[in-house]
Image 1 (cartoon, rainbow, N blue to C red):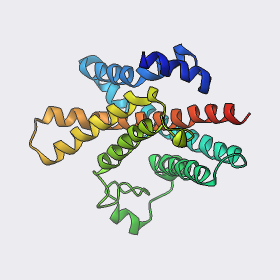
Image 2: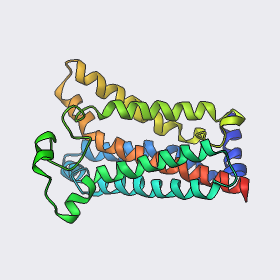
Image 3: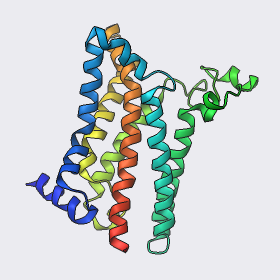
Length: 236
């Protein structure tokens, strides 16, 4: 009954069909299953590893979803600025700019496309010798904490969405599987850093880290896409 009600709400408030809603709901599960199925088959394992290497499909898609999500959010903030409270506009603007910054971090600010060298002083501080912030000493290897915060923020957004005062920035429950998977992987990742576990489990979590970043980027894009449709319908 609850699922049926939320699917109907998606159609009425977000102009999203039932088929599209179900696709969005189950997509993260399908992505995880498909990728790990490739890893499980020896003849496809090297291909699975290749997919998540630097500048390969998974990282490129992550960059694109963060970037387009950021641009969509900025456009949304500009579009609704005349009809909505400034605090909401500030929220969407801030969130969107963060996505654009993360997108640029994902490709080392274009370093591997423009072929420029990392400044020597920055290279000494960066674990991977790149022009990125998240690989600086002290930040590198702790991304799971940020992922966990993102996941719980998504759950909070879903919880607040049922209240009228938060409806314009809330998260639709259809994105719940995305945040649950992100949270579970982040908790497991944090646990492996503090406990002695088998090397196979550790490697499995590390290999899936790039995939989790992709799920974060897609879910952020979907959040802004869904809310832009809802707000556009509200103020059209």
